[in-house]
Length: 328
Ligand code: AMP
Ligand code: MG
Image (cartoon, rainbow, N blue to C red; front, side, top):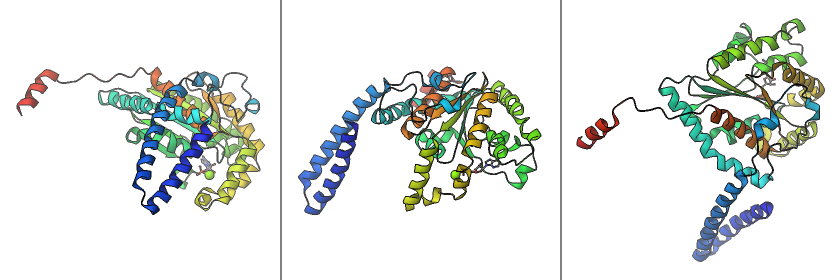
């Protein structure tokens, strides 16, 4: 049914163009009417699709004995709908996410210290950028996003957490890390960029760092977008097939792909050693982009709802102000 609806949508656009050529005003009106009907159906569908969301956070949380290799990367844990439902559910929850983020910010204007940090890790093409474009963009004002690349000379001269600390969200903000402190035990471990005795101590250093961050009022949501090796190949191939995707293609990605198993081992170690009670990991099956986006949105909503954010009361006399304003 969903695919059919999408197909119809495309057909509609094609017809509209022909209508313009022939100067068919009636046809244009019919197209507008159809679009309005479709919007109504979509709204109804959104409400239904939300019902398919179960407890995503619990389904994805990494606990003791978690085995990355056992995860079905094309699964949709905690969601019982299909792709069309998933897209509708994502859209339906945008307003609440936006509202929660505004509450977070509002609270900080009254001295609140809460913030949220979303850490997104994943292999190349796992969809980290899509999270920014499709999940977070609901509220850009209160968002502090940082993409961590290979460290600069200056960054290398400092402790590995130096650049991370500088990028933490301020009170009221949602911080988003596209890659993070975890690169220092992932790419660094896989490529032996520092001796083992250095990187092996970093798990405990990261845990201690995150404990401090949490104690200061930040809710940390850690996400690994988990794709299969085959899905990565398809996504890289698509980048080569489409000139509008060349800019995302990096020949180095193919070399990293050759180290897939070493990366999976390094990720497993991260999940074993740094999924703490205060800052647990969530492994999000990401072969289906629509599911990964919905899941991350739900993880954020879960975190924000748990903070029970309230609009701050007025720090002025509302009635007196009302009178003053009326008379002005
Ligand atoms: P991208 O996210 O595709 O733009 O690529 C960023 C690149 O920076 C990736 O290849 C990462 O592995 C690399 N990178 C990020 N953090 C570090 C780090 N701490 N040490 C070395 N390489 C890193
Ligand atoms: Mg890349």
